[in-house]
Image (tube, rainbow, N blue to C red; front, side, top):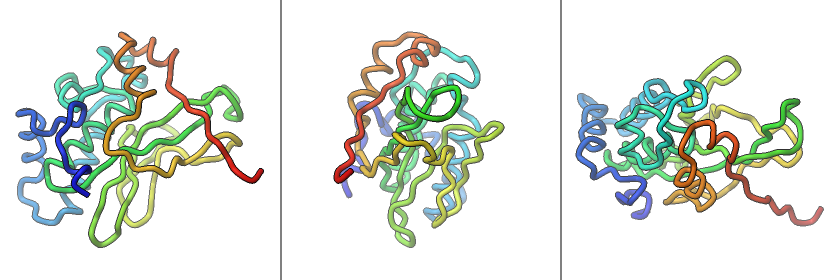
Length: 197
């Protein structure tokens, strides 16, 4: 479980500003689930999704997301993991593979970033602080998952891993693209292998 509590290059919760925000979000609370909910709502509602709000710069590190108040889903998940870890709540990164086609069915696909956190009462629980908008209503209500996007089309998938660190395809895009539009034109994807078909 220790890897899901560490401060790292991208989930840099020991950064002064990130730690201060984590402490302010936990103020007056002792219950870890209540602290987790407050951190989730903060990232979902107060950090603007780069595409929805047409915001630059492209952020990746939790501290940069906090500083600029914007990020793609991946970057927002890095900040949420940092805020949770700073409060002693194990948190990791999860991904979905979703279609981005205009008709909502089939290729092209991209990865979508979200989080899982560990709560003693519920075990691992996935949350999606991407940011709500018409048609997207993610929430924090353990043990029930309320994610931003359901898996509905062939080729889409909930990837089962809970990563302690961001995966390569995500880091590659966030570190090489310099505008929110460029990220949108180069969204990361991976191939999903399905056995026994």
